[in-house]
Image (cartoon, rainbow, N blue to C red):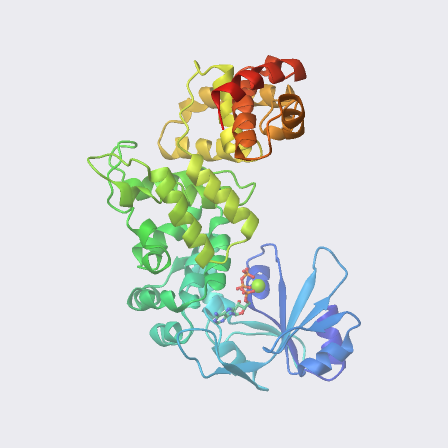
Length: 440
Ligand code: ATP
Ligand code: MG
């Protein structure tokens, strides 16, 4: 209201628009506020102490200093022009017409405005009957769906995402429009797809969006390997295929950390390619590579990408209670202690996806055993050994070179198998024997 009034006080028309108005009208929490105004970006910027004109699209970000509001995006009224290659418009044209600005928006519930000119009382402007659709819970493209999706293919992903986050239905004409234009998604940049995908995965029931993606033909242009899960048989939940299993796993996955749901989506991505005689040999390693390529295409955050690939790579570990303590330590060293908590979360999701949550007992046990090893200061790499390469050179007169590394690795194996040997005297004695065995 403060920003709206400031703009109007300076003689400009201003409205609340987009998702913030939609969410206010349906009495939901608003995450980010969008305003539109007749003021040009430089004029908007000059009205506020803390405002940045950040891009070529006429948007000024105003920092409110109120943490519950954050940054408010104030965009100059515009009409879009020159759509090409199914992406965002190549240039924008400023306008004084709120109607033109609303007409370029994606769905009717996002194409309303509340506010007005300085001398008017605020009103709701709703030329596309967004309020009717909001009350009925319907997502309907503004204008001719095919044309709008040809202009910008991202709108199809936005519709699917909103269906999941709002719990709305997609109007049949809009649905048909998506089906006929789905393939255009292959022209979108990885970043834009990724932004929608992460919102889909954060929805209360992410499978709502994922199922729509697959059924409408939007998934194949994003990941042919995931789309190929449809129809692959699984002996898990009777009557369900691999895609059903994946979706159950995603729905069952923890919401924190946020990338666990993505890991669940990708955990069996290697299965269609490795399927032979009802088995999927090596699907974890193959899946890790496919996942890495996909996340690279999507320009996914590097740290999460590495973590997710590692989770896909290791998700097949087969813990049984008679694993020795040494086996537990080898497992920790192989997977890496920082990945393990996430790997267990992924297994929880995988178990739910397989209709066998009763495996929770084994999961509690391996979690406990890992924690005990970590608390006991388990040695996982060469740095934890009681001696180092310098000691070997000095005491055993082994010259620097690859042989040193071989011996240190062998010592590490011995310490992981039996931590008691990790003392200087014992390790030097073992190293002497190894040095004789590993002749230069
Ligand atoms: P949320 O902020 O909850 O993710 P939103 O609908 O507010 O959803 P934003 O990306 O913040 O989405 O966009 C704000 C508004 O801009 C939308 O409500 C819509 O009116 C318009 N909009 C955004 N992207 C597009 C697009 N690709 N095509 C047409 N209009 C769009
Ligand atoms: Mg928004």
